[in-house]
Length: 377
Image 1 (cartoon, rainbow, N blue to C red):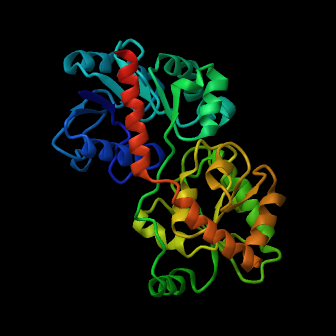
Image 2 (image 1 turned 90 degrees about the vertical axis):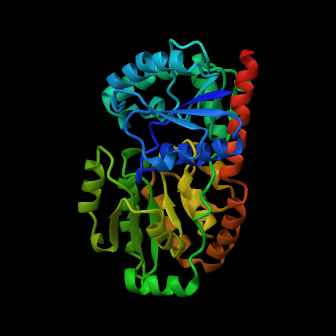
């Protein structure tokens, strides 16, 4: 069998949500199914590290698809020509985009419909494109994979897709995320944090991630903080960061907030492993991978009580109203001051992490692809 793959998010040293999902799932599927051929379509020169095995054929397809107008050219004009050339049995698209003119079986991973609920958090051009085309992609799909029961219900409700056509594959978590050894962590705590305790946020700095309210809530928490907690914010600046910057410049305790920018997983893990908890309160999320990364390090979370986040967090987090700075601030106080609560949540965090793995994600995704091919047979 020949599987065509949208590989445009496999970018060296730039693996965020969609890229990380693509990398973790594809490398496992390729290695577990050497009897099949995988044709990876890239929209730029690929890095050799993503050609996982000999059964991968990399193909550069022009142009770079990084804008709605270019999406149309790449998916609706360029890829159909490549499908005629390579004659794949199925097209797998980890970012949810499909080729509407193509007649082969197609499986998108639609992670969430955030652009439907919060179009203001996407560029106007992007929001128009997504809201016009994703209903078409969903209806074109032979089967759909998604990452949470919440997203499955949302796709069904928003686009009228039968739930029997949607498979939940969840996300996994890298084995690299684990507790840092105590001696190394003690040294890190002194050298990097001057011995102060901290909370940590991981993710792009984007309006949907609710960074502004998070900073306001932390500033409010600091009014009663006697232990000199710090907040470490890890992630690249996305777009529309004016709200974040305004919130930061309005803070009384600016010197307790530390922005690292984008860092590697290796650099991130001690910040995460040594944190009192993850602070992650988006207004909408299809899954929330940072929760699993924290849980695997034995770190509990403060997270939102909306969308998929309670589903993923289980009992390993304090869930808050992401639209209420008081709710977030009170959770910070509880996590900082109640050792019994913190320790209990830490145990539950490690247990919760065991429910998820990239091996399981890859297996469920492969089953979805097989069902799509069977459905078209």
